[in-house]
Image 1 (cartoon, rainbow, N blue to C red):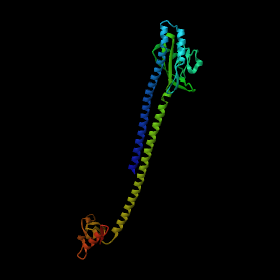
Image 2 (spheres, rainbow, N blue to C red):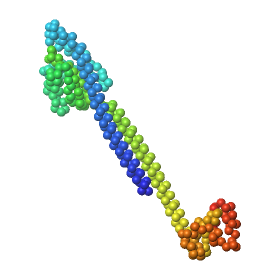
Image 3 (cartoon, rainbow, N blue to C red):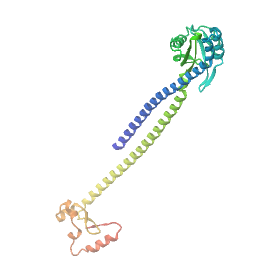
Image 4 (cartoon, one colour):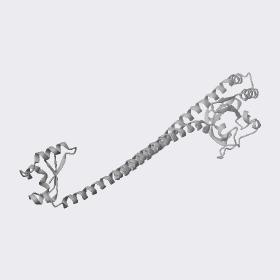
Amino acid sequence: MKSSKRWIIVIAVCSLLLITSELLISQYVSSEFSKLTLNYRKSSVSRMVHLAYNSIRPILYDVHNGRLDSDAAREKVIDYVRNMTYEDEYGKNYIFMSSYDGTMLVQPFESRKEGSNQLDLQDSNGRYIIRELVKAAQENPKGSFVSYNYFLPTEQRVEEKWSYVIGIPELDAYIGTGMYVESSYRELQRLLKLQRYGFLFMIAVILSASIVSILSLLKSNQKLSREIRDRMYAESNIRTVFDSIHDAVMIHDNNGNILLANKQTGLLYGIPEDQITNYTIRDFSTEENDVEGTLLQASLLENDSLIFG
């Protein structure tokens, strides 16, 4: 019983270790995969902005060559950028454009803000969004990322957003696009959750089956223990009756070897009880006893022993 209980504890501990290990591994995989996903998405976003910048580069050449002034060039670029909406794997997206003084020039999904100054626009954490974008565009015109919290286009819900901006010093403006981080992780989190639940279900099934098997074994062991105890008790009673017989009684096999004798046998023949099995019935027989005939009967019986008295 103690051994069975010990096995139940061992299985429970091993299952707990497996579950803990799976959760830690799942957390690590989730973290690493999230980083890879974020880097991939950031690469896609920056590539989209560079494509947009390359499409307006001819206009900027005209500004450099004096064929177009800054105001006219800005209007042409605004017309180009306003049509730069696209769809990625997470939904609709767009290229935005603002001036260095904070004026929103192009915002396809929030056109009411175009022409307004958004320099004091803050996210839910109090960070000045446009100021950070302007700063990034001026300090690194070739492109850089800015992180902030912003409302989802179709939902009244705030989510972390990464925007990539490229400065356009010729127009005192910048262009950029962004991505929402949670939407990038949503599918990954769903798959990892399914994988985690599947693993936990498998562990639960294995643990339940193991416990049921051990409990069944424990029940069988208890039944066997009762049977052994009852048999030992019965044998003890038989031995008591056997030793209470006043005549000498011996049990032997069909070769005449003594297997068991009662106490009266030792007293009658003066032989210690623990040495009687060293003798055969021939050692205690008289000429009148047909020992060989008795042994022949024993050999013909289904059991291999007879009682000789």
